[in-house]
Image (cartoon, rainbow, N blue to C red; front, side, top):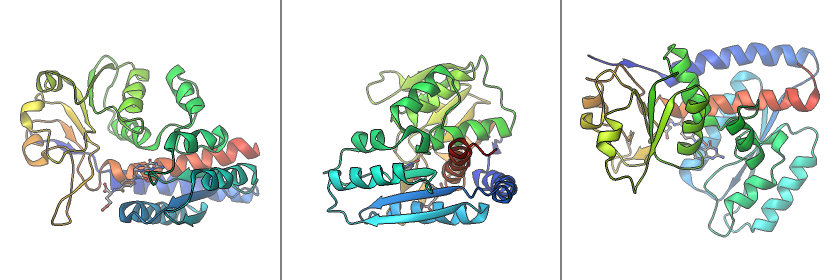
Length: 285
Ligand SMILES: Nc1nc2c(c(=O)[nH]1)N[C@@H](CN(C=O)c1ccc(C(=O)N[C@@H](CCC(=O)O)C(=O)O)cc1)CN2
């Protein structure tokens, strides 16, 4: 079996065209969704992701602004800025690019963002709603993964989904979203003893461990759907995923590549959340 590739870049382009039409409609009603991105420091990868967010917003007609702060910014200064953005009626979505410099506690910052403007879906109130299956902002990468699976009509109900990784941004929430779709979910992590056996039992395998090519064919059941969330920069500058694409694609039914897989979907779902925030805050549909 050779796997079908789920191309996140192509799906993103389609979704952005749909959003563009929606945003045009909102603009006619006097609403232009506005996203404010806050970047602290000069991490090159973060800079590039933020640029990608601005570009994607422009394509869909969403307005965006970028606030760049020096890496010496204190937690209090950042919290003060977030309070101002919370009160600013022209701002619908606030995103603080992660990671933050060591002197700033990420959780304090996440909790400072008003839940109605939390387009990253990281605020505990939104995470709680996600867990109880209420309508809310979903974390962008997990939301993108579920959207990719649905785009190929991949059945989740009753399937065994194995999530390798337990980060707050990806692993934990994607498992929850799969559970919300009635999958049977198993989490694996650095302390899991028989990871290979568990993974090889998965109908849907989500690799989010941050280790290049760690998931080889031995971890994959024939016909499984394999989603690669890894973004590993190699010494030669090339980007690779957590999955050994060449061997795994021979046995999986579907596979996501890196690049052009889950990454572009993360940005696209941020735009979806920004439109949702603008509609929710303005009352304009
Ligand atoms: N506040 C947040 N910070 C971070 C998040 C997040 O969702 N919210 N996620 C990641 C980084 N990220 C978005 O911010 C992100 C990562 C990767 C991509 C992407 O499009 N990747 C491309 C390759 C790009 C390249 O060549 O470097 C791909 O996979 O094709 C977009 C967004 C951590 N921080």
